[in-house]
Image (cartoon, rainbow, N blue to C red):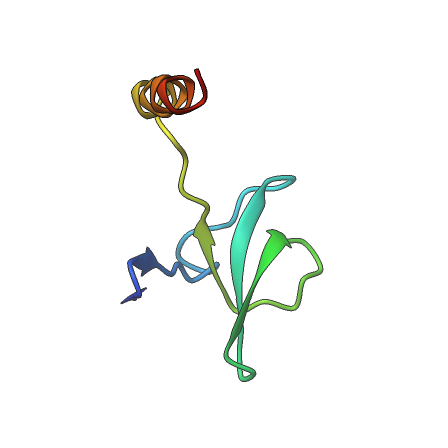
Length: 68
C-alpha cells in the first residue's frame, strides 16, 4: 500500500529487517514512528529513504559554495 510516497509493507509478506531503523505504522492509532521493528507493536513498516553518494556530493558542493 503506497501512501504519501511511502510504500508500506506488511510483515507477513515482507519480513522487516532486524536491527535496522525503519518507519513503523501503528494501527489503529494512525501514527508513524521511526525505530526498530522488534517489539514495536507496529502493523506495517517501510524502509527509510537513503541519499545516494552522488546526491550527497551535490549537497556538499552546494553547501561549500554558500558558506565559502
